[in-house]
Image 1 (cartoon, rainbow, N blue to C red):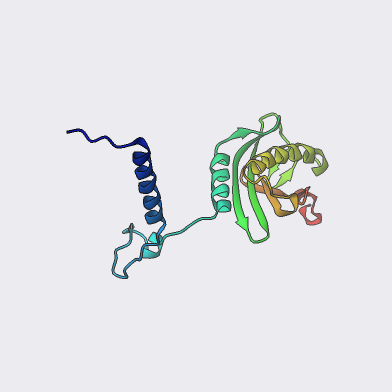
Image 2 (tube, helix red, strand yellow):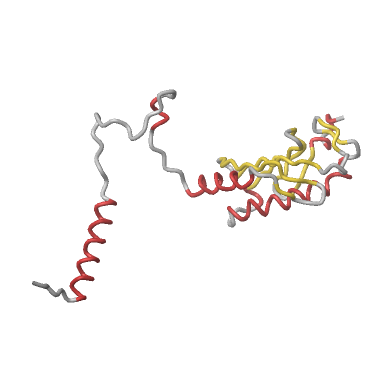
Amino acid sequence: MHLRVPLWLALAACAGCLALGSVRAQAPQEKKPDDPPLRTYAYLPKEYADDYSPSVADWQALRMTAVGASPERLSEHFTRLQCSAFLASKGLAVKLDLGPDAHWKYYAGGGKFTVPAARVKPDLEKAVAAARQLVRSHFQELQDKDLAIIVHIRGERVGLWNEGKLSLEAEKPDAG
């Protein structure tokens, strides 16, 4: 015996099942105090297994940091070694670590240069501008006033880009 079901009835039944399934999935599930945690880490305190819901900004900062973890050529003189984003209360902080090209011999180490800061600043500004493109690709609405980029060369801090201006450690009076 064959039972023929009208197409409209079958589609209505499918739609009903989908609707009930999504309502059930969205309904808050009560957790009993004696329920075991969803996951445990024997080597860490139990707080590490607590649930955490990151914001969209948290995810974007994590995504940007993941992309920034691989080296990439930024300018004729610099390669990005690493670029990490950190959400702060007053804006986005970005750590940019640069690796100079072999022919760019102006870095003396320790945040100092072998030539005046005015000579190296344009080269560093080009690298920062390229890094800002990475930031903008993850945070399109972010304004310059809400962005700070801490600039490093081979892990040593050399400057800070803030509110559209790059200031170098070597320019400070006590930098000698």
